[in-house]
Image (cartoon, rainbow, N blue to C red):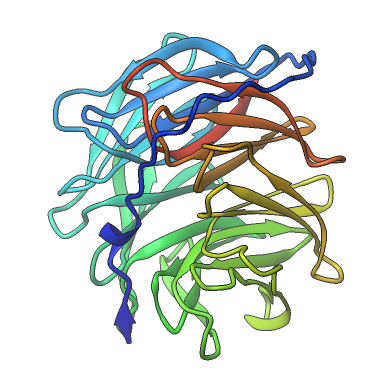
Length: 338
């Protein structure tokens, strides 16, 4: 199996000056968090109603290049592209460090995070692509999963229905279903030729959705019980390189690493396009998506690292967050309802 070189995808393009007419909405009870591929690593806490900065978390020395975010039990967890891999647990109220998990020496580049049943799971962009199960209270390792064959580069990670699913950025694309209690392999799905480099995973209505870093950027709907293909979504021409997936209100949303950035809303029953959001000029390369209440948020791999708030019914821009100077390349987003 051939591999995908992560370094090929660090694209930072300064945007032109633009003016956008926005609509202000009222959303309370939660925050959006944006993680930046900077040294040191930074995470911004954003008010979703005003799309303004609340507070910034700056990581300790050595914890650089945020590549993953997750929320669990009232805390935010930050994964870094470091060797060895590190994960910070931070208090979202004060945006201060609670505790750091430092992975074993064989685990580096923590590029994916998810949670299940009170535990945190970390996927590593190394060879083989291991997954660590972490106790979030103590930030200590519970057990590690090592793939039985040779899937490298654990890039996509999600959890539902009592299992953890990991997608690998290899050729052909490969997804494994893991038993979190024993951290052992249950079953795997291997894509057909042309569906290479799994870059994102999400779930909806009991199904697994897999996004590929391909041209065009395909998304596959997988039956998690049998780990078999249900149906494939092939996007319009120019919608290439899936970098992010999320789900909201019965739909799946797909973010593409294109200029300008695009987000597709797809019907998961028919796996067909409902509508596309095309970002304004300069908002290029959607690297991350999250949802909070009734809105979708898209983060871009540009400088500064903009975050757009999108109304999913019309797939139109509501408002843009512009971060402080030096906060560039939004590699990860998460949200936390309070």
